[in-house]
Image 1 (cartoon, rainbow, N blue to C red):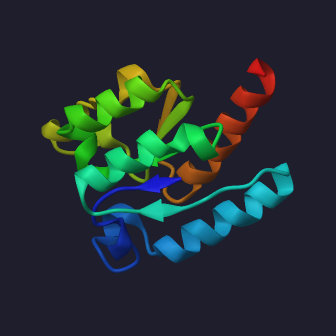
Image 2 (spheres, rainbow, N blue to C red; image 1 turned 90 degrees about the vertical axis):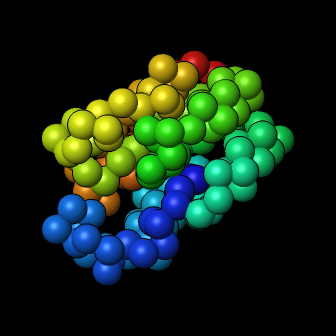
Length: 142
């Protein structure tokens, strides 16, 4: 699980948009769900684009899939898009809010064309749905 910039502020940052669950709470929920699914999840958060790119590059060495909320980089980063495309590892894009019901500039995702799917608008449950989706995909394709 890769969390992008400003997600470390969850719980206090615009709770009317992002909810009141903290990043720690989301990571705890992911860990609990991963235990139920009998898989392991590793959760990392970065505020810098290059750190996310580096984590994506390393992912195939340690993981079978990626779940990513690239946050604002979703709408701006060709580098993250190219990193995901370049490592060729199944990836699911998640967002807390429905990016298509927000400002126009958030309607475009550079990441969407290179991931197996996108989940948005379900608050912190988007992450659980993303985990379930990647696990299901991996189990049916391996």
